[in-house]
View 1 (cartoon, rainbow, N blue to C red):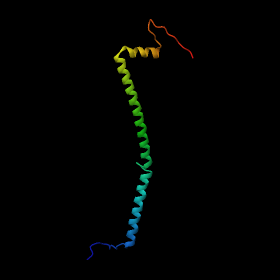
View 2: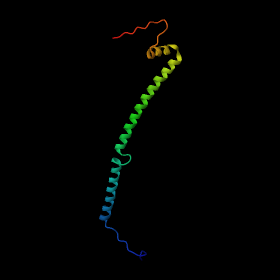
View 3: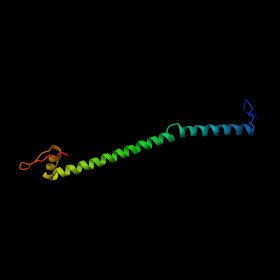
View 4: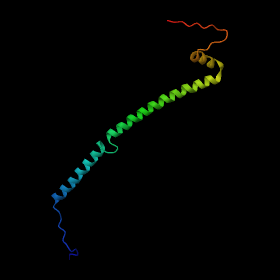
Amino acid sequence: MNFLPFTLHPLPCASIMKIIIAIIILLIVHFQYRIWVGDGSVAEIDAYQQRLNDLKKQAEEKRQRNEALYAEVLDLRKGQEAIEERARDELGMIKEDETFFHVLE
């Protein structure tokens, strides 16, 4: 007894295999596209890695600069010698009883 209003004819085995192969090929093409061109592609990951390396380098340079500034702040807090040295080097100041000789080469 047939309860369906239509009859189902099974597809030949070769037709099913052609459909499965076509689906697999489409999936491979889709995934290859995503790997090479789409979001998260190899080129995009390389660009992100380069950007990350640049940012790490900048952060390291800023960290070293901050350490130098912190050391300078400690020196300035410690004593008069650092202040005197900075005044001499940057402002050209001299003490009251000193004589300044400027040598031209």
